[in-house]
Length: 301
Image (tube, rainbow, N blue to C red; front, side, top):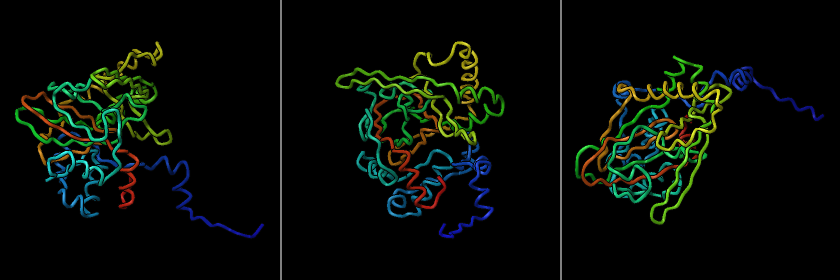
């Protein structure tokens, strides 16, 4: 009625059409196995540059977004300094484990992390309705042997499944699975349940955005129809085979002063058994705020 006319360019219309969105990825990534990651020679970022300059923070976040892991070097090995490091990127997500967690092999919580045992590859907090997005690890002290950290790009493994057996990939992305955590140790009493498929994809472009994989916390399989169970197990076995290929395993020795950030929606972690006294601290970060920080620095996230 007022005669107003809005003009849109053809490029804008194509880009924002449904068909246009199907051709675009939400989150550019570089999928990797151990050899690909080593050849990339992804640099760690110095703590001072990380804390004091936007350039250092941006370099760190670019590494993190592309590979799902990133390191900061020369961090003062205390829980307090690790907290300052984490808050540079995001809000810290407080959970049943507290705000900043600090653990040794003292069995103080009903979790296998609080032991000296080897841990198979897994993602954390699969028993949350929304698993924690980012995990921070900093080894403050280790007087002993072993204890290397295992890292596996879950998206790389899932991509191999998609290529070899697309029907199995689809099954893992459609069938919900229950994960459960029950704890009654000391003053800690918790019962957490999270339900969701192992692989989570955006429906409009089939882009994988989350892998929920933890055989320690997988509950009774009562969310899978009877006529699907056998096919689901076969699909899960195919994915597990890819995740356990030695060439996909990146082993890293954490040490005081070297902090590791892990995309818990993408990269699985584990560890080898260790001896002696070992102290680790860390926390979970809210995913939205990490991505927010990245976007404010001009990165696609």
